[in-house]
Image 1: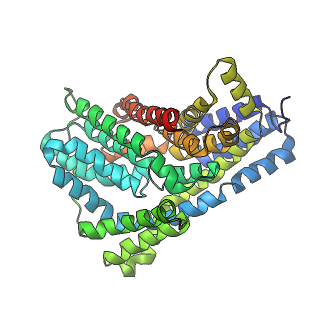
Image 2: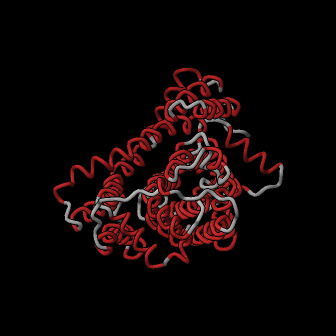
Image 3: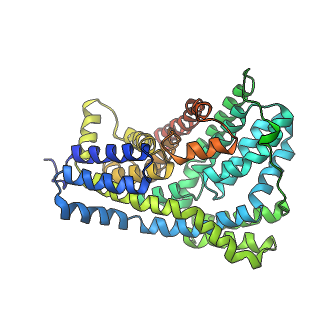
Length: 422
């Protein structure tokens, strides 16, 4: 017997479509999601009171994630403003040399993203270094940008970033465990990114890096040990739970790492300035998550889950396929890894768990799936990354299939790992 739901599947789907259309029309994503949730709830037959209550409840469910994301801004702000992120990137590129420039750029972006810097900021941070070395090594912009984006995608699924935090919250799993679950998929994604970027490096008629693209920085950078110490503290604190059974919440670990980074680089007097900068970088994501919670609440309270499972059964497709598929579709719809992973996880976590899919594996597959088509033109990531190397919209769009291949690599490996080890 089918359970009773507050909203119909049609209402939930219409609400999501309206939100997508509004995002494409350049309405702020948070407002787009809230309005989509409201209209979807009303069309879905919930009535005004039930719809608003469900939206509020959905937004409230995001508060623990929002708190952790807000405190993560302390780490991101410290790594960027102290020059630590740039030092890490420069060291990796210098050590690997120009002959391995593509691999060095991808690895540098992966590491910076993996230690807690958002993927778009990771790309923007590495871009000046990549352009400078690309100019010397005569590498086209397409190769450089794909190496950065691909490395960022690999680092993103093993990072304490907003998408990982939201997925771990939705599935009720330890953040560190979820990060480690995708370690092998991340490595495979990195290899795919390097191979594809190397392929683009060998193509003729690529976009040349011009003198005007290269900018020199006057920032005095810290030493490598000083730069890496803050992220190492975060890794150690988060690793205490699986290693020693000591649970240090990301709410504590991430800002502690940021404060350590600020102190060891001799910037104690700039602590307030750096934290304010970090907060400015996470406010947008936090607001987006609140809007995401409203539409996720409507979808979760609709018959959509039930109907999707029945469709999979009718097509004789295993229920676990819903995990990566939901991540792919929702991230593509919102053009955001964070929003996509959050909506997919919040909506389908109960269904996947009820179908016997282990929470950790389901969370990993959803998260990996959210990196496949998350960089479509109706999202900010597309434009921010293209702008970082002065690339036109049409040229930037040509990279989308290659980016999707990187995300699809990690997704397929994540699914295979579930099939092998559960």
